[in-house]
Length: 316
Image (cartoon, rainbow, N blue to C red; front, side, top):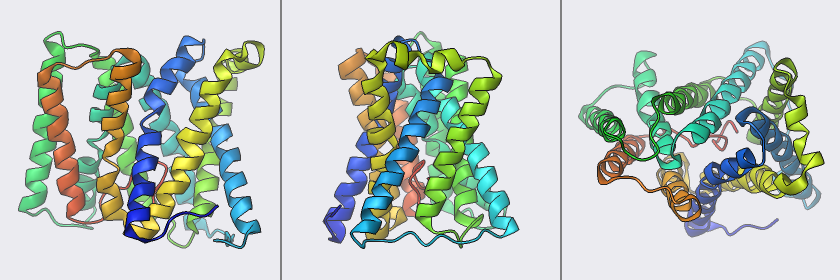
């Protein structure tokens, strides 16, 4: 699998990855319409995504590109990876549940407050300082979220408080996930971490499915295969391929530029939701979303603060 090199090639790879991640909102709605739940959808995506990543890694190793150097984990890295898996399980389950209850654009706007939460967390643990630029960015994110909530509380389309809370929970988990990925297991090669975490989430979702007695729902696509195309898309085009593309892009252009370009994701998701699901936001909600994304972009220009979910330089 040959990808274009250079800054343009890296930027295009990140942009493509962000657009593919942005399809997960509409794809999840298709799965829910077919009878699946957020948990069983997450299970299918994680399983197919892991299989797709295994194929990509195997192909690249066979042609002699980027072999994966598997290493023995020390205790600290093992604990950090385990924590990242648990965080990723909650993260994806929260955002996919939000997609079920909330308009996709609003869910993504809420989710993209995570760069602000990463900045706050980094300051709290003493990794970074809080300068005027970061204060401005945090203020933009806070004002943006307030505007989105005010627009929704006034009867804005597609707003539900519980769904909004779930999206914010996903944002908080993403912030923890990013901080873990940056500091928790630096010696673990990227591809190895990607496979371990995505595969670990699949195991976690399977355990939750069995514990909740919803295995019959998870097996629904075998009885009614109409959902299989959207599940295959979610696993391959919504997990394996964009994770790989973002990894390629981040190695070429760096995590800061890649993080800024990845802000295409909520725009792509909102656009697709409008085209495919006829979801339209009112002007106040749009304005709030713009402020949130502006704050995220400003934070990421200040340093390597927030890498997109499931495609960072150290985690998946």
